[in-house]
Length: 320
Image: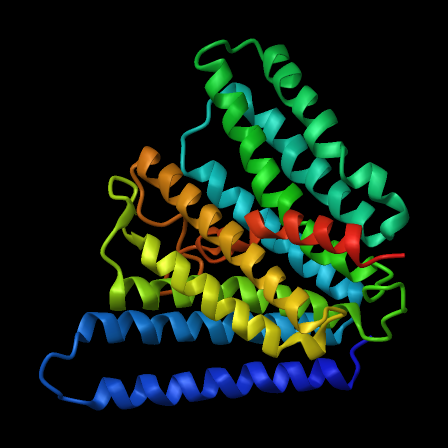
């Protein structure tokens, strides 16, 4: 259940968003020469999405672990829907997709919700059993056209949108200790909020650094705005912010800093990878669930890539 630290962390997030919103309003009303109106509009649109995401996440946090697991299950379902929708499917895929959406996705989150004692199950069901089931079920449908491509797309979507993302709520069921074996008496909800906040901040800070000092684009044909300077700047600043928020985690300041660095690297890789997929499919955004902004998958691609790494590092070093 949420404790005082949880409410304090929520208050910090809301205060930061409020300040950013005020800045956005002031910038929008300013007529200063050289002001990029389009950039300000995107910034304000992003803030609206953040407010929506924070509101939903806070409500989920206050309902306890099951509420958060259900929330992430819904996000996984919608993210997978957007991923599959990026490329057309054939009639022979429909029954395979039924199993993916209505059997393997809920099964993964049911296993998560039953607790960490099911670790051996929820870490292998999708990468082993679902990966074997998908091509077998597709073959039974009798459609061989682009068979390998279709199976690979479904498998990868399930892996990223469901398997990887499910490791975020799995943090709620870890029995956490500090370095040295001392039991941590904080709420695991705080650790989940810390992870999500750091992952989202890393992407925002990368964009800020890239726009400010960025000159060496990482992959021009995939994303012309992502630079090495942006990634390095985000690694440094996100690491410092993570260290300052270590009071919400079982980490010492230097451990929180390192965790911030790891999350930033994985979040950046995840966003770049998803950009490559979108360029391959000829789309700009994965969806438009949130009016005026990109789809759900566009908002969580960084979390999807960072979640399993953060989970396994935490489980290996910070559980009894």
